[in-house]
Image 1 (cartoon, rainbow, N blue to C red):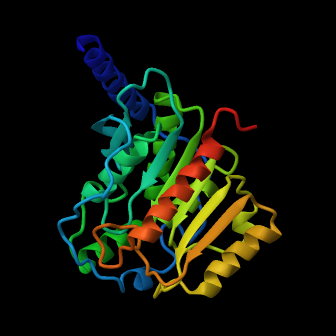
Image 2 (image 1 turned 180 degrees about the vertical axis):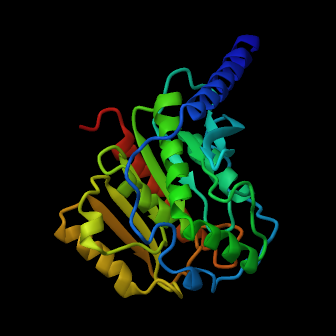
Length: 298
């Protein structure tokens, strides 16, 4: 027992030290995402209301024990950025990583619970923070935080670059994916644009995305899109246009629309939460990540 605890503590300590050293060296000079980085339609997203300020978290517990730590992974504007790092407690060698990007409320208890749950499936998970430690409990607060990112997308680009560098270099992940909800889903696709030849999988939950083929053409990451049929701000035509653009470009992609459910169906703190759709979407995501993050995939 003592040895196991020592090893767990050693993993966290080594990564924490690596994060400090990594950020001291500066960020990558990779290209930026497109002009609409962060959110294609802030007004549409903010038509939603935050009903539950408690942010009670994901419903299911992790399938296996995990260890977690609030950890610095980036330096933006000379300030350290802290994310939520989670890994299986029995991890003794590098695992594939998932960069998790929060929705419009920020890096709250619900996102941390989702990160725990995903790490329990055998992944390193870094839940990033695009809001500098702030979270929203009202629609007005969420809108303000979203606008702070969309008005300065390059800072968010640097944040995502640092997250990728952290999981791939400091944590040693052999493969890396991104997953995000709504606002975070848009940034999940933007990450694929930032790392067109390096990201191994991209998961998008009910997010505004571009159907601009010039922006999508460089992306080589397989894409999974999970959408709500009754979404009030993302019309079926825009989802169809996105899928059609990916099809014309012959990109590896899957788009699934859950008819009869509303946006934020996967969020257990939302009035729109739909357990059946959420469970199926989680299953599809795990199967998708399993295929594309597997060491056996060619």
